[in-house]
Image 1: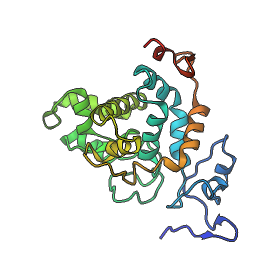
Image 2: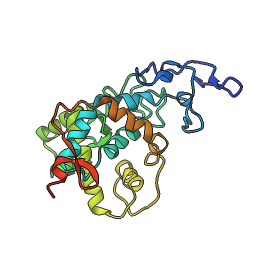
Image 3: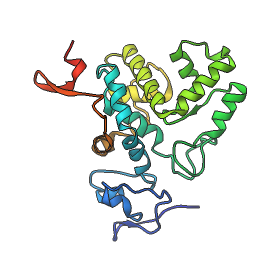
Image 4: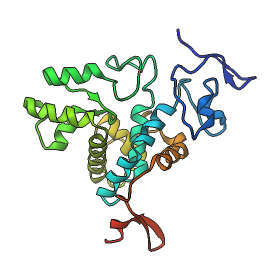
Length: 250
C-alpha cells in the first residue's frame, strides 16, 4: 500500500513523491517523479522517499550549526553536526517511519514525535523528539541530572531545549563532543552510529550512522546555501588551511 513503482526505461517513478518538498537551488527537487535528483550514478534512495526534507532542515539551521561548531573551536565540525541532522531526520516524511509509532504521519521534523513529547512532559517517560532526535535521558545526563529522578522543572527545561532548533544543535555538539572524548580513535561513522544507538564498544556502523554517507556533497551544499552568519562566525586563513578565527588562537 502506498508503494511507489519505478520505471527503469523512463528513469522516473510512476507516481509522485508524497513529500511536497522543493528547493530553489536544486532544480530536480521540483520534479516529484525524479529519482535521486536525476543522478542515480552518485546517489541512492532505497525507500523511494525524498531527501529534501532533511536538506532543507540543514539549510534553515546552517547559521546555528556554524555558531555551535565555532563555540567549540571546530572540534565538532559543521558537517558532522549536519550529518546528525540528516541521519535523524532523513525519513520525516515517510508515511510509515519504520516501527516508530510516535512519529507524526505527516509534516516535518518540528511536529514529529508529539506522543513521545507529551508522555515525557506528563509522566517522565523517556523518548526521542525534536530535530536532534535525542533521547531525553541522554539530554538529562548532558545537563548533569539523574534521568530517573527528574523534577517537573527539569523535564520542562529538557522539553524546551529539545523543542528549540538552536538549543538542540548545541546539545548535538555536546553529545558528539562526549562521544569523541570516549572514543578518540573511532571513525566519524561509528560516532554517528553511537549517537543513534547509544554509547557502545562496537565499531560496527549501523544503518542510521551510515545514512548520510552517500549524500555528503548535498549536505555540504545545503550548509553553504543556508549559511548567513551575520559576521558572528569568522573564517580566516590559518597556516595552510582555512579555519574558524578562534582556532588560530591555539
